[in-house]
Amino acid sequence: MRFAVWALSMTFASLVVPAVSWGQSQTARPTQMGQGELEQRQGEMAVLTELRKSNTVKIDPREEAAYRAFYSVKPGDLDKKIQLGNDFLKKFPKSPLAEAVDAGLVNAYYNKQDWKDFYTAADNALALKPDDVDVLTTVGWVIPHFFHPNDPDVDARLDKAESFEKRAIQAMEKMPKPDYLSESQFAALKAQKAVQAHSALGLVYFRREDYPNSVKELQQATQNNPNPDPTDLFVLGDSLENLDRYAEAAEAFDRCSQVPGSLQDRCQQNAAGAKKQAAHSKPE
Image (cartoon, rainbow, N blue to C red; front, side):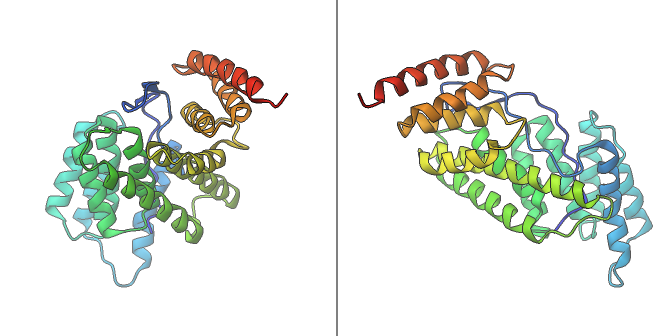
């Protein structure tokens, strides 16, 4: 499994979730393990280090130079990164570095919101390494967030998202620790990735109106989390209301209302409504 290229950056503060009445989501995109700039560079170069350890893999100096150029592009220069990535894959389609480049292109296309090429790059990366945790988690997260209920393939897409997140969780259990991370860093970052996977699963089940499972997953994503995604809290509150668990819904909406952003006012209103419902539903 890929454990070295943890390159996704926190680019968007808010994402549109068009299928629900609350409209603007302010959810944070999945972050990759080793998301800091230093850890990112260490991870990218660790791919080369790991390949050099193998007696069966040889890297052409031209491939290495092209790879280094691809990962040296400034984060905001997406067009250049995409061009260099595609040029690399055309010149070196059988390179042992191809999967890492495909994964880097997934990040670049995400930042451009170029969904067609985003999914193509992800499919290419997973064809080479099916248990790439970052790609699995990212794609599984994007599908239910950029959701179009009239898409004729909507059920298949949600199935794909569910499958990817479950695969990511299983892969994380067997993942070796990268040399450039300490044990505590690795444990913390795996926990973070697990939160993101459960967050995505919670929204997948919400889209299916499977509220019990939505609650189960979103509770795992938000409990004992000092900085929960407000969208997760909002959807958790909505799912709990659909299960007539109004007191718990009010708690979720209250937590959401403490986070500044586009959902804050709506969460305050929903918290008040859930509290009223909870009071009315109490046995006399």
